Image 1 (cartoon, rainbow, N blue to C red):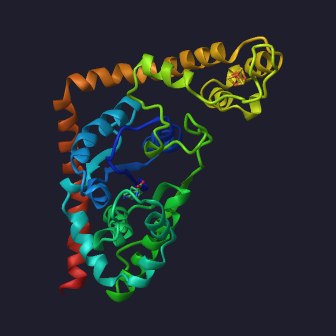
Image 2: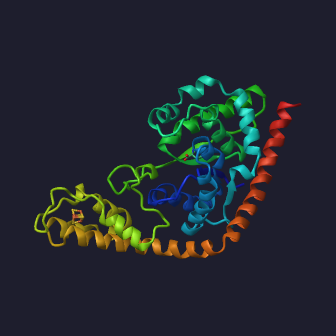
Image 3: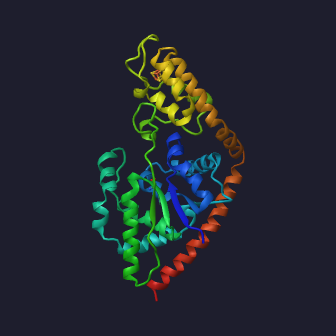
Length: 326
Ligand code: TRP
Ligand code: SF4
C-alpha cells in the first residue's frame, strides 16, 4: 500500500511564484511516489473570507488551473474540493466534540492571526475551530504525512493530539500518527523584499502576462548604494540577484561580475531577469491557455476527484460512526 499524503490550499486568490517554489514544487515530487490528495480548502477559505465569499468560487477553478499548468496530474493524484466531500464536515463535527477549548485557544498560529489580521473579524466560533477542520481533512484520508510550511506545524501537532484522543476515547486505533514534511521557507521574497504575499501586493502571479512580469520586475528594489551605472553594486544585498539565484542559478556568476564591476546597469539586469522569468513561465502559460479554453475539463477533473476522495472518506466515516454509535 502506498503512503497517503494530504495537503491543501485555500482558494482565496491567484497563486504566485512563492507558492510554486514553496509548496507546488514539493507536491510535484510527492505525486510521483505516493498517493497524494490535494485539497481545495474552500470551507477554510470561508472561515476567513465570509464577507467576501465570491472570491472562493472564482479562485477554485483558477487555482486548479494553476495546479494543472504547473504539472500536478489528476491521473496520479486526487484533486478534492473540500465542500464536494461532506465527510470533511462530518468528521469535523466529531472532532469538535472531543477537542478541548484550551488546545485551540493556546494555538500560537491562531493567536498571531487574531493579532495581525485587522481587515477581517476573525473572532468567530468557526475560525477558532480552523485547525479542527484541518485535522479532519488530514485524518479523513488516514494520511501518513502532510507537506506544510513552518507556520502550520502547530496545526499538525494538534491533528496528532486529536487523533490520539479519538483513539483513546473510543478505544480503537482508527487514526495513526501523521508526520510533517517540512517545506523549507522559500528563499524567494516579494518584489519589495518582504515575504511574498497577496496581502502585500508584492507577488508575481503564475497567470501574469509577459508584459506584467516585465513591469513588476522593473519596479523591484535594487541595491540602494548603486545609483549611477558606474557605481559598483552589491548583488548580495539585491533582491534581483536573489531571484536569479532561484530561477537562473547558472547566471549567478555573470550577475555578480556585471554588478560588482559596474558593467551592466540595473535596468538591463532587471530586463534580463524578466526574460528569464518569462521563459520559466512560458510552458505554464501554454498549459494554462489550454485549460482556460476548456473549463469543462477542469470540472470533469474535479468530479472525478470527488468520486475518488469520497470512496476513501466514506470508508473512514463508516469506521468512525461504527465506534461511536455501536
Ligand atoms: N491551512 C492551510 C493553509 O492555509 C490549508 C489547509 C487546509 C491544509 N487543510 C489542510 C494544509 C490540511 C495541510 C493539510 O495553507
Ligand atoms: Fe541588483 Fe542587478 Fe542592479 Fe546589481 S545590477 S544592484 S544585481 S539589479
